[in-house]
Length: 213
Image 1 (tube, rainbow, N blue to C red):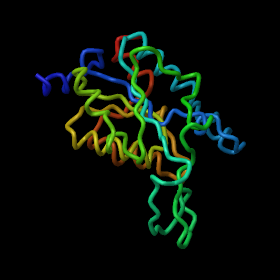
Image 2: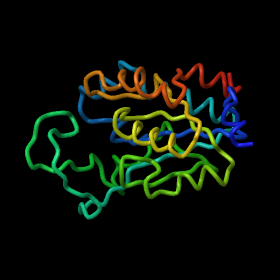
Image 3: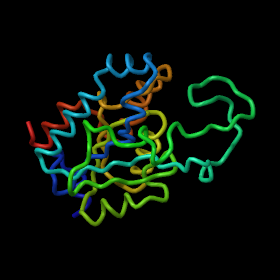
Image 4: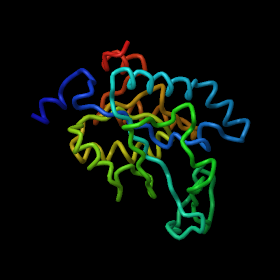
C-alpha cells in the first residue's frame, strides 16, 4: 500500500506532509542588507507563505525541522575543512552554527508560524532526520511523501533529501522555495542532483497537486 501511495501524482493529506526547513527568523529576516536583498529578489518568504497557505487549505500537516544548537558549543564538533560555510578559504577554524537555541534568531518566522497539529522537530545537525524523531512523526501519520522547502539548498535541504531518499520516502522539492547564496549551488542541486531522487516543482505546481488551488 505504501508503495502505491508514494507513486500517486497528487499531494493529498492521506500520505503527504510539508517540511519547512529552518524557517527561522535569523535566515528569513537577516540583519545583513545583502542577504535581505537576496531573499527579496527571489521572493522567498512570500513563496513559502503561499506554499504553507496551500498546505493549510489542503489540511496537510507541516513539519518544522529547526536548528537548536547549544549556546556554549557543547553539541558542536570542530573539524578540519578547506572553507567556511560561505566557501572562503580557512585554516583550522571550526565551522560554528549560525544561531543558537532560545535566541530570537532561532525562532520560527512569525509569517510561517506553526498551528495546532503541526510538528516542530529540533535538530543538531544538517539533516532533519539525523537523531531526531521526524521519521517517526511521519510514519505514525501514514505519511510517505514529503514536500520540502527552505534553505540552504546545498546544506540542510540536500542533507535531508538524501536521507529521505534512503528512507524510501517520496520527495517533492520546491524550486522557488529553496535558496542558497553560494555561487550556482542552488541551481546545481535543483537541476542536476534532486531530479534523480525527487520531483522538483514550483509552489504553484505543488499547491495545485495538493488540490488547494
